Length: 406
Ligand SMILES: *[C@@H]1O[C@H](CO)[C@@H](O)[C@H](O)[C@H]1NC(C)=O
Ligand SMILES: *[C@@H]1O[C@H](CO)[C@@H](O)[C@H](O)[C@H]1NC(C)=O
Ligand SMILES: *[C@@H]1O[C@H](CO)[C@@H](O)[C@H](O)[C@H]1NC(C)=O
Ligand SMILES: *[C@@H]1O[C@H](CO)[C@@H](O)[C@H](O)[C@H]1NC(C)=O
Ligand SMILES: *[C@@H]1O[C@H](CO)[C@@H](O)[C@H](O)[C@H]1NC(C)=O
Image 1 (tube, rainbow, N blue to C red):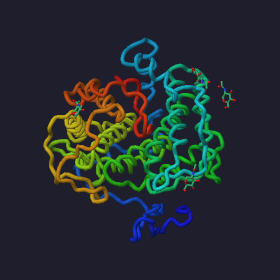
Image 2 (cartoon, rainbow, N blue to C red; image 1 turned 180 degrees about the vertical axis):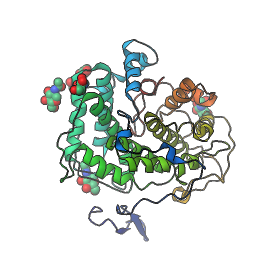
Image 3 (cartoon, rainbow, N blue to C red; image 1 turned 30 degrees about the horizontal axis):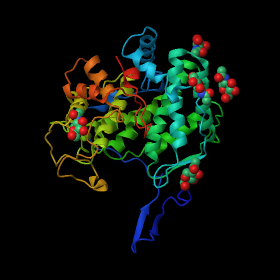
Image 4 (spheres, protein in one colour; image 1 turned 180 degrees about the horizontal axis):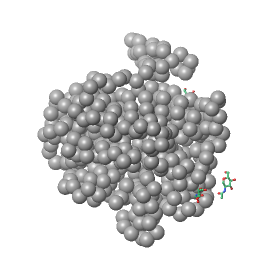
């Protein structure tokens, strides 16, 4: 019903209380993005901008051609860590060419109503099979991924619900990564494309995914939009969308890397909320930087490696060490999530491969760049193997020692 009355604030009388609870059922999609004013970092974001569609590198989201080749060669030449990771990866149910597609569906919702697990699972299978195809060149994997992309691309009509930008930013991002590999390495062209009907993968990417992610929220939630907008923009060769997201990564005072991590300690603006949000936010920020890196821009090193500082702080606390906490460093609209917070939160404290961000951080900063990051390194060892995540399977790609290793 929210689809037809998007502006309504519904007052529902709950049977067990006598007061009315006003529930925000949907976001009016016509509100435009909130413009970022000025620069928090003093950095000129424009030096990372694209000028024209032909400036984009393809494939160029999380995996460039060189990245894919490194992975494939590592597996074929039985080099570590790729070989061991591939053994587990290739056995996973989402990597099988005979995975049986659960969708497509016409309407999905994430928010008060959440009914998108068929999409979550299919997207995961599409991405893992695209990697399987690249490594093995077995057409059955190509076929499975293209079938999933084409099916959802032709059938999905709308995504509703107040958290729809998480659905497009998490599932949608994994999906476009699969499509980018298939299109630029596998010569896949989408089926069912029809501009006037808004049908076909790229039409959905444009209308449903990128337009619905353009209102950037706060903190990790906002970073989900930023990192996925970068991915969507690369696929679509959308110069404005890409530059908009790059600018937000650097200048958005509620969601930029500079608003997320304290320049003095690396404390996350959500450290007082809980450790799972603090941890995922680091992964999402790194995925944004990864896409920019594929496009030739190094955002990992911004702010004197501020993201690594953030990783070190959160790794340290979650490894049970003590960290300094500054209650005045918190996110925009913390009040929405019971903040601001007087003390660091120990909710969800711990290092677990069910929040698989540590390998990506370790390989990027320690192995590739040779930087000293003792807590990130320890976290990567402590979590064990980053394989299948059992809940929220699309929040983060996982399989770091296969797909993000150097
Ligand atoms: C799918 O393929 C795997 C091997 O790739 C096999 O072990 C499994 O039994 C197959 N499942 C079905 C349902 O055919
Ligand atoms: C999901 O929920 C929305 C909103 O209630 C509904 O329109 C849609 O049909 C549902 N989709 C599925 C697959 O159940
Ligand atoms: C490719 O997918 C189609 C449609 O599902 C199926 O009919 C065909 O057998 C598949 N081919 C291979 C090689 O897996
Ligand atoms: C894709 O097309 C190009 C150009 O026709 C060709 O060289 C390449 O081998 C094709 N790749 C695949 C995986 O079919
Ligand atoms: C941190 O402490 C908790 C509770 O004592 C314990 O379960 C966990 O294993 C510890 N983690 C590490 C990395 O030592």
